Length: 284
Image (tube, rainbow, N blue to C red; front, side, top):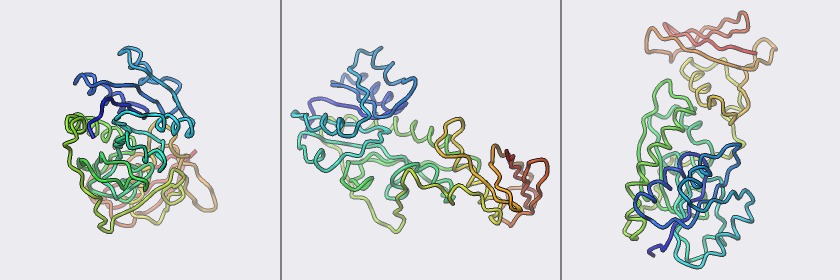
């Protein structure tokens, strides 16, 4: 089905990039729906500047009714979007819904995929554009791009990189989405399938002081979204104390931090040492 128009739904920088790609290609964008609440919305500002209809819609039933009311061939671009399309919306045959996900599905389906990629110490992650399916993040793959995870990459770093790569990939596949020529590949179930809810937190948010230094560092990076409070601050339990972790820093004089570290605690700092690697953890 060739779409007659596009609707973009999502929040943050990725729908902005998708909108710009569509406008640059003179693609008719019927409107943009923001599905996340922000004190300042760059998406709203962009729509106002580019004279594109913008709607803030946070209620799931309202979103469903919007998509159910569409009666002409429409490409729906779900770009960093928290709304899960129910079956009754997907049954609207005038819709073709494609979605961005910030991992290589089926690994780390669901929420906060960068966190889980780092916590599980994956060497490679990536992004996926796929058809929306009633089962979350299990629709046919349209395109995927791989991203290497550096040894100091934080969840915020990885999130931003996935958005950049996703925007580039969308620009590349847009012509085929518009003429219906794009290929679709069923998701391969290869034993690495995983699903995470928004309420799931690595190890319950608690740093295990018995971990290797590399593992402890991966845990801290996995929960590190900078100033964005995606998770509650991590904690550590030490000598009967419940310590809130406020900061961390790693120093390496060698690349090896895989052994079991020694541990000291002084002046509200936990210090883990393994060979020539030191991880300093500040506790509040």
